[in-house]
Length: 146
Image (cartoon, rainbow, N blue to C red; front, top):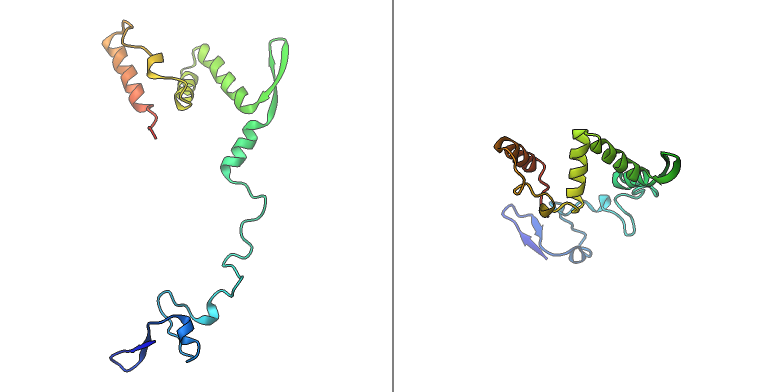
């Protein structure tokens, strides 16, 4: 099927099957030249992603799951690197490290283990300045809801 244009040339309105017997083929938007089209069974990315290639999430998970030997007093214990990291930060937080405390609290909040009911500042006798600091910290460290 062809429609005649103002300049007398023919514009294609049909499919490639309609053009097959006449030998005409209109090249344009969405209609690349026949010689540059992919042949049947041929991909635009023949080599593709190499097998065994891992993304960043998989690599981080693999590294954090690796076992490590930790000494706890007299006992030697094996645990994952992630568990050792969390334990180290909890110990630092207990000794008064404020960054470690913030890390542990964000971790608890991120894993939904720290609910609003667990942190009851309303019943505590806090100075207005302390309450303002806590509210500002909550505002900055709020995790977005999904």
